[in-house]
Image (cartoon, rainbow, N blue to C red; front, side, top):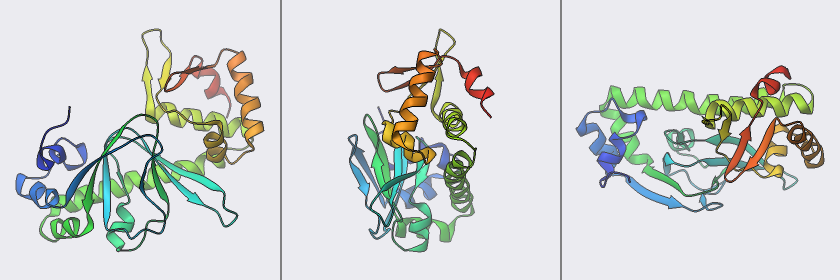
Length: 230
């Protein structure tokens, strides 16, 4: 259960942990909680960036559409991270769709004018924004690192290592459960490969006992084998 008021919900986020109550109050005046079902849009590419959002629970994927009409996953963002912040600060439009992934996603959508008002009066808010921008850049940079890893097996292994680091949870049996439900098409987009190729490689890894499909994600049984593919 989340706290009842926007101020207490903001205070519960690591991003705003250093802010004083008065600083939180300025942001809270422009904060609106939202609950999204899997596949629901938070915003569309091209929408005016009048807000940014901080994820309270769940995972949001940012997608862009190529000139050929193909959807491309450019980043996955988890609880505690901000999305849409660069566009909101610039006062422009969102460059990609923000889509809730499997399960229920809870976010706090904060108006850009409330953010600017808080920034004008607070050094601490500025530090929080800088941290959020660095995290955002790192999440987008990961896509570049993955697609530049080499062959498709290497790219897939790099993606799995990335998912383990960001979304993995150790199990009692010593394996790792990656609680992200990605369709094979999403995985193919993240590694810039054909869906058929991705399916073939993942099937081989499953037969070898490295991975297993689980409800709501993937269980990594042999992380050591994935780390050998470099």
